[in-house]
Length: 235
Image (cartoon, rainbow, N blue to C red; front, side):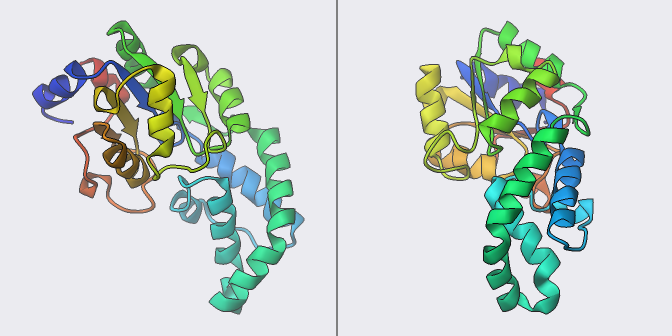
């Protein structure tokens, strides 16, 4: 956000913050590329470029795997790709889980300003939760490996609740865990998924400008503000 006053106003009205992980705190595209590359090799399928993966990240592992399989199988036509994707999905899921756990965090980097932003929010007395569509079993060790786990009172992955973002349920449940009202709980994310979930849950939302927004310009998303670095949350 370029105008400091509106951001200050948003922060003055909240008691807690919910922070997304992939594309917001940590650049995990390298991990996704490595794990998906291993999965595709196991299945005897052609590779996929990171530029395509980036547009598929954000709606959970199940959606990511189906999107990748559909992409690499599309040479046979969309109808055939959909049929083959479902046939291959169980083996793809098992392979992906194995490869991702093996590389989790190795090709990922914490975004500049992430530590400073989290420190500022904690210093302001806000309770924090990390809410991601990444499986909890991937999210917790990643946060620990990157030294980010200590900032959060709670960590919830995409398998923690019955539905994932952009459904509002995960935000509503996370607010309950934090003991705060949605209207006084800031959502900080990188995509339309986060913004849609926040709007539906009744949370204010600020988006970072550098993450994964399905290949779409993030500033076109309905949000209460934008920041080029999480460090701006303490400015």
